[in-house]
Length: 474
Ligand code: OOG
Ligand code: NI
Image (cartoon, rainbow, N blue to C red; front, side):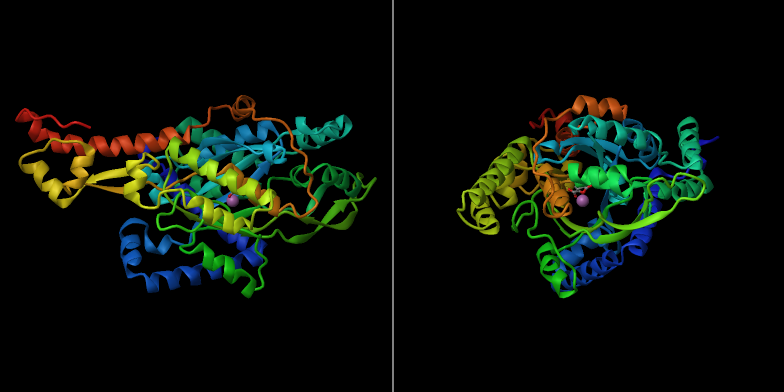
């Protein structure tokens, strides 16, 4: 089969994120309500800020502003994670970064499957935050074994999905017809099942150990537990939720509001209590009887992204966040007040962020720079070229997640009374073994992006200069 008849992975991912969105809105009506709110807020922001409107028209595709940017799932076994990696690869999504949530008392570790190249992110940035249960962190041996058995006996992928993954791997892609079927079949893995795999007593035991364990083990598959559109004003959405009868989590995760947004700000509405059915004890025969109960897992989230930070910037972010959390514990003030106060130490202009090596930037030639490059060429340092108006810099958007924020999102959706136990430590090696691949290093990806943009500029500028013997210094 010829590569040119394959549908682009970006297109398959775009179809998939659209299908997930439609399914989730049907499954969780409150999520549709959140989407409406986000669309209204975004429209109001664009109405007021013509400059932003103009900028987004050029860079982000205005019609796609409110589209979902990520979703999240939780799987139970190494094998499930392994196959998911293969499934996401069909759509051009690769595992980036390792997140250890065990430090926050959540018995999972995670990665985010996402497109990596700039052009692919621009076409459709949809990511899936994917967590793997760490059953080894359950102390009760009998419970652990029973949970393992349930997990080992389920198949979360349809046969057709598995066949299409195989086909995509052997052929190197899928044609349009196969791609459409692939999306339909892949969707089945993430669908909600109101009928549990187990009985109520077992569910309660798992739930008492940790709510998340019950969520992962009890059902037929890793139902999508939230989707997350992008908002242009997260503070307005946070305020607007209660007005529409939506119950938001207490605080927005991430940095406070700033002139130059950094990293990622997120908030969510609290997970809904939903009616589910448990297998009746002894109901294993031909006719299974069902017992009504409830389960809390699914919610809606919103995000607003800012500049990616360098290791130095990230260390400062972590330090200020830690200080804030410690301050709250010591009763020094409210979370919000302390956050704003502490983050005043984080420079808030792009010039300072760059000068202090705190954030990553994409460099390009200005019109003036392009003209000079064509005619005479030029030499100088990056600082000098920026100052001379030959280079321009734009922030590189952060495409990943934040472990402390993720823990906050998890926790607010596990409800009160979730176990406070702090489990063990990171185990990236075990995660990658299960995944069957190494996760990509997010910081290296941003650094490469920055360097590549600079190299492109310097090459253009130095073509003439080199000929005339005046090299460009980086
Ligand atoms: C994932 C929570 C993390 C985020 O946006 O940080 C997450 C989960 O609840 O499964 O999605
Ligand atoms: Ni999320």
